[in-house]
Structure formats: C-alpha cells, structure tokens
Length: 328
Image (tube, rainbow, N blue to C red; front, side, top):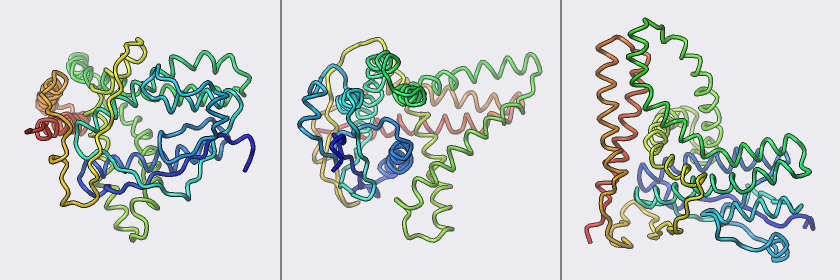
C-alpha cells in the first residue's frame, strides 16, 4: 500500500437498479460518475472525492485533515478536499463493487439531490480560495474548482428554461433565425457519448450492441428530462449553499428494496405534505405547455423538442411527488 494513500474508494453496485424508472435513471447517471468521472480523475492524477460509502480511510488521514466536520451537508466531499490539500491521495478502485441501495421514491431522491447540490456549493465556497492559494499545479486547481462548481449547472439550466419563453416573443418580434442554436447540439452529442460509454459495460454489460443502443435511446432523453425537471429544486439548494444558509442533514431513506415486488410504502419514515416547490414544479409544467403551443403558433419549431422535454421533466417530477406522498 502506498503510504501517501489515505482513502480507497470503490464503485457502487446498485442492488435495486431495476426497481423503477427513477432507480434506472439514477443508476444511468451514477455509472457515468464512477466509470468516467472518478476513473478519469484517477487517470489524470487530479483530485478525487470520497463518495460517503464503499470506501476505507486511514485513521491517521482523518486526524491529519482535522477530522469530520459538520459545517457542510456533504462532509465526505469536505474531508476529501481537506485531506488532499494536506498531501494525502485518494485511490479509486473500479474493479471492486460495493452493494448500494438507490432512493426508491421521489422524495428520498430529491432530498439526496438537495443535500448533494447544496453541499457541493458549500464546499465550493469553502475550498476554492484555499485551492487557489495552494501549491497545486494550475491544471489541478482549475479541475478542482470546476468539480466543486459543478452543481451550479442546475441554476443555468433553470434560468435558460424560464427565459426560453420570452425569447420566443423576442425572436418573433425581431424575426431572428433560431437555426444558429443548433450549434449547441455538439454539446449534447459529446454528453451522449460520455453517457453511452459510462453505461455500456456496467448497466448493459453482456447485452448485444443493438440492445445497448436501444437502451441508450430510451434512457438518455429521459435522463435529460429528469435533470431539467429537478432544476428548480436543485437551484434552490445551490443558492442556499452559496449564501451559507444552514439546514439540517436529511438522511436518505433506505427500504431494503432489491426486487420489483418490494414496496417502499410499508417502510415510509414519516408522513409528507405537498410542498410549495412541488406546486411550482406543476405550474412550470403548465408554463412550458403554453410555450409549446406558442412554438406552433409562431412557427418556432426549433424549440419544440426543448419545451416538450421540459414538460415531461417538470410534469413527471410533480406527478411522482404527488403519487409518492405517504398515506400513513
């Protein structure tokens, strides 16, 4: 064992991946995190993160880094950066699989997302100044800062979505051509390649090529819709994190769900009520339905697919949130 390695992180194996569409889309994203992001950071000798579970720490590393801290919602990411800024290394072993349960219902999934997004923003606020002042190479500094700022993408997703509707009227009034926006398809193509590679030998291992392509054609658009639908919820988390607005740690519920016939309802932790954010998500689905109608009325067909995905995203988040309320 390298004496400079303070943490060994392994890859999550999703025991309930096939339980529902929600768990399948979570696995679709997390497979990319482990097989592309973590493996890429390891190969490029960049700073990594401990994922909270499925890993082992040296006691000496924890003590040298200052111990566990509760001043952010992602204490695992916090300690990861403090340890690496102290000179310790994180070793990622992709070949070791550790069983892990994904949130099976939407409220647990949303609370986990809130914690991850807010905690990421809190750690960005906390560590980017220290990273800039450190002796790390410039590329490592840039990569670390980008990593810590990654949750901010949801703010951009939400702002662009909301502004797309008034943009329709501006483009119509000034007779602007929307064809230039197809240049952004290059970003979608790159993301598509990353997500395909991240899942071809994990979620779809052993399947024939045509089946892998079919799976990808289904799950990638749905994953984009899910990300759009979570953009309001996650943006609130990010903004709170940057504003240093403190909130309690909400544990992700676990129900020991491994088979399709298992149910999370019998293990509900507490009764829930419809939140204001959920109501707004439902109203946003109607907002983008109006936008879709306007698309056809004024002939801006370039926005049809985008607004349709936003309807599916916000609409599905709203419907799942209502359906998964506890009946206790």
